[in-house]
Length: 593
Image 1 (tube, rainbow, N blue to C red):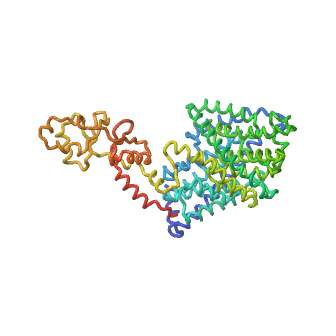
Image 2 (image 1 turned 90 degrees about the vertical axis):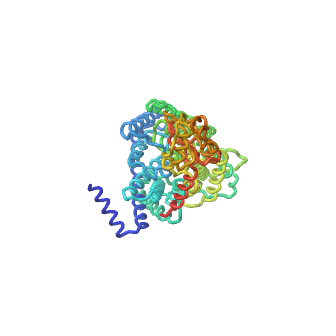
């Protein structure tokens, strides 16, 4: 009761003193701050766990804890999901897109804290994934919860979710512009100019919060020391193509391994198998332990002597050819490590792995170029940074986010030209083979495509349950034509499903099918309905998406199709009813933020 009184008082105060727009701006600032605090808590927690687990290790030798820690972390997160939170951690950004598209922008309140704990354990114990997605989910869940508390409509809740995402990305990297663009490019399917102000406010709030609370050693920052040289442009073109192909490799390997891991139905065996395999991979390639940003810092600082630290191959440090070989191994194995982590029950995202893989790819390409005497020399730090942009652009299908993120974390726009070039080439390369990102690929396979096409989005938001006519008159196959004629007299429709006692669909009869004999007295007595019925042009399943339903109407030319649920007749759906519902929703579907 007290909770309801508090909410009522807040709503009364808001109506009295704030316009709807100003209230939304105030909420966006609060959500940005919440996302910033969540970012700080998670980063600090992971930093603390990693420090406790790895302190005292000897950089000059292989450390066998790499075999055990990832397995232990995956087992803990699996048990947490099963017995504490009683729901899987989910698929990060994909779940947000699904919530906006199919759940009226409602995200479980539990997600506002479960992802923080799950990802802290996963990454702290060496899981080879990023923290960005869990922080984005946390910010989005907080935003959705706040939106429900103050009774906002679904469209405004979606905008608040975008604010939570913008604040999260901005806080993690201290990159307010990239935060806004990520929200527009990845999270929100439709944005008008009025939405920019709340997004900007949330992003700035997240950035300021992180600046006030973060320790400097936790933030990922790098100051550019080498300028862009125009004569390096051909090499950057090559880098863009390679980044696109690496992005394609990352996407398909990650998706395939995750699918395989999900085919193992039991949680603990899946965690054991994935944890053991992940431990072996990280033992051989220690830079893949955790987020991997410290390793990227090593590359950017040019400390090649540290590349093989904690590795079986430390003794190879003086072998010039071995470092490029080791780096190529990282490129091949990073997608596998990330997929094993996610597929085994770990909590994290692909944002961080795409940056890690891009940095390693850029460094490797630059190292190969510098090793070829006839090709001249290039800046390894510049290639590392631009490679991060290229692979992120391809994996996330977010070229603008990648460009501005790298520009902001380097504190300037010196590399803007190669960033734009490589991002565009990488995105174009992967798009030729893979039209959708890892965020949307799974949704598409399940027929839950989230699209920026307004017409398509409106169609997907129509609810099958509300469109099925369940009160249509039906007839038994053993009934006579006379019984059917009696139904015709009281029916408002000219189509009659033929249903047996088990509620199974035998066929359909239309008025046109009986028009010539319906007034024949002899036929009314002797003709059985079952002999008149025929198969419908197609059948709709209750699980079909509206796009699938419309495809069936288009393919058959029919105006009415029967709907089945678990093999039983559930009703009839008509094209005209879909069109009417579509038109009404299209009129309402205006992003009036």
